[in-house]
Amino acid sequence: MSLFSACLDALLPRSCLLCGERARSALCAGCAADLPRLCGPLCPVCATPIAAPAPACGSCLKASPAFDATLAPLRYTYPIDGLVRNLKYRCRLASADFFAQAMLAATQPARPVGALIVPVPLSAGRLRERGFNQALEIARPLARALHLPLDATSLVRPRETLPQSSLPWRARKGNVRHAFACTRDLTGASVIIVDDVMTSGATLDAVARTLKDHGAARVVNWVATRALKSAT
Image 1: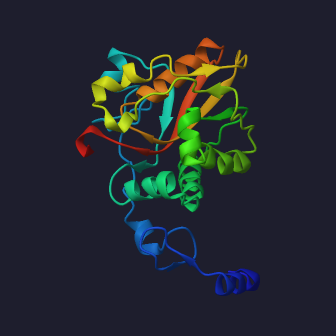
Image 2: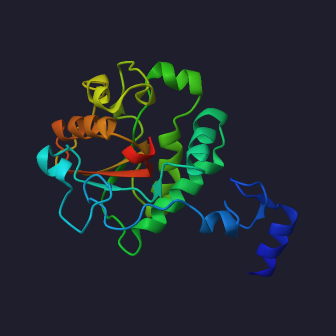
């Protein structure tokens, strides 16, 4: 550590986002070591665990989603679920930067080139209620770090829907059907969709269908956390 960094750390000490202890980064060493990382063979399309490496899991082979791949570094379970809730409902925006860094670490050494970053939008009512879009707050540091363009306006959510978390998995696809619209020609574009949590994948599938209807050639999900059926 440089002298400047040491002085800055002494003057502006940080607290671990999880346990509150003093930390040199978003998390202390202990909490960082205990993170519920999503690892092992994963379906490259939807990021669910599979028994052995394969082009896709059985579900994706049976009914291919509109998106082409999914990156998800963390499992949506304790204590990461608390960070997500703190970001969305308590305006703990430091968590957004932590999630962005987790996704960036998961992309090493391959980094995307020439892609457009698009956060999953909130409806106008939900945005007024919350005051910010957590997906956009995660997307901002990603775009800066990757030197990729960020488009936070072309994809919109004109229709109010029920919160996906309030519905059983099978009902979620219908809840977000036709919920999104795009105002931009994306012919030939490669798009990275950014969101905080992927559960059933219904929202991200609806987003990807909308983007591909407007010409996107490839749509990849970058989600901070992945909820699995065994954890819900």
